Length: 252
Ligand code: MN
Image (cartoon, rainbow, N blue to C red; front, side, top):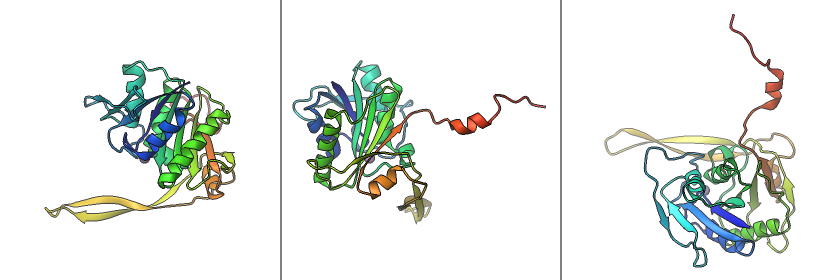
């Protein structure tokens, strides 16, 4: 199996390396990652600046491996549409930090995987709900086991958004729950500061707060110490509302 690996934390991130090392036992790994951290850029693509590629083996055994000045979505597009790489699976991660609920709309990690799905490949986004170095290694081993045991039925119409609790044991992992995407509410706080010319600027900070929106959501699985897997698709249509609406209406 050919696996195209990307991320949004950048080429030098621990999570990318851990996953590349773990996935080598499963298939041929190719790497296309941003040259520096691009977290929270969402599904942005670069259309007004040149995209440059620097080939560099992420680990010595990986020859198909590059970094680029583009976004996570650019990385996957370049690999497939400029270089002609044809993976069987696109995996993005392992992100440093959770991508739960509405995070997926801001997430570069999820967007790299979503770009893979849009281009016609099964895709998986992986995030560690924490940042510990050993957490990445254990999470990578768990992802490898999930693939070896066929726990995620790979489909060309589905991206699996996988969130893994920090500090789990790869030899005895917690149960995997298939979940719904929840809503994640942030208590955003813009701190107003002044630049040396006295002009105000704003710096976004704040914390997330749990939003209780029913059973079966991704955040509940993580709160219970389980691995959360949410199947996602690019189509954001609210189908139940569409069914209630007339097919068309004429202006009076
Ligand atoms: Mn990130």
